[in-house]
Length: 330
Ligand code: NDP
Ligand code: GDR
Image (cartoon, rainbow, N blue to C red; front, side, top):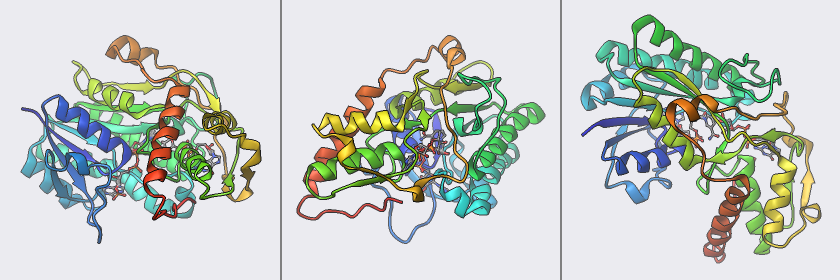
């Protein structure tokens, strides 16, 4: 039985990856950071099937201890400060988690067992300002936020440890991927949750930022399969993971509202508070390499993804109706 260590297991991707690896017969160890209240909402249904260990990407020794104790065959480094706007308000902390955290984990692997296979969660935010479309592995990076800059560091340190020490280290340059477990502050979930609350009469308007930004949105369940596939190859490499389709935030909003019979123009308010200091205008990925070498392809189309998220939130909000939660939407 192979052992996988997942950092960021309490996050969206971590929960889907843990489910996927359990189905493959892995022993799954999830690293969580210490919090005063448990934060296991996304993994409570599999909590009895996985092992949880406390550690932090900010703490080098905790990583070394965990690698020594659990002896993973594969490490999936998904933990990060992943919300782009927060990277402007906490740029140094974002660098510590999202950039240097990668080096700390790679150092733990190098020191304890360099034969461990390593996956780094790189991001389409590294492409940033449009240089070329669609974006592929060879497209130059031009990050537009401290988050994007930190991910470029994480990406290149992964490449460097592969080239310097021969570690089987791969980067998945994943474009946006979403699900009913997406954090409430990201735009797809903010919209699906907002639509559900409006439809249930709990909210009157939805305040958003730039409706013209375009993203290549896929389904998280498809993306975690690509992460695993990368670590099963004969040689380590980096891959763009994307659907190849792009849509604007406006299209997302229009579709989500129309799914419950509403016209978004009656509810959406553009609030400059949500504009970014520097925007990424257009992302669309070319995942030909992953399709050819990994045999990967996405299975969920944009329209189905939006429908899935709105329906899940309609149910969630209905179940909360007597005790509505106030979303912490920024
Ligand atoms: P989430 O924000 O949902 O999850 C992030 C996870 O990282 C959480 O489990 C969080 O723990 C954990 N974490 C944060 N800081 C630390 C730390 N210092 N030590 C240990 N754990 C920490 O992100 P996603 O699941 O959406 O994304 C997973 C990864 O993929 C991230 O690295 C993200 O940047 C990257 N990515 C995501 C894409 C997407 O579209 N989803 C696309 C491309 C890249 P806690 O629950 O305690 O906060
Ligand atoms: P992104 O995702 O920044 O692409 O990063 P997000 O959903 O936050 O934004 C997508 C686009 O929507 C526009 N937008 C808004 N965004 C938010 N969050 N809230 C709003 O009200 C709003 N209105 C418009 C944004 O300006 C942006 O253009 C995600 C994260 O998961 C990263 O960790 C990951 O690396 C990248 O995807 C790929």
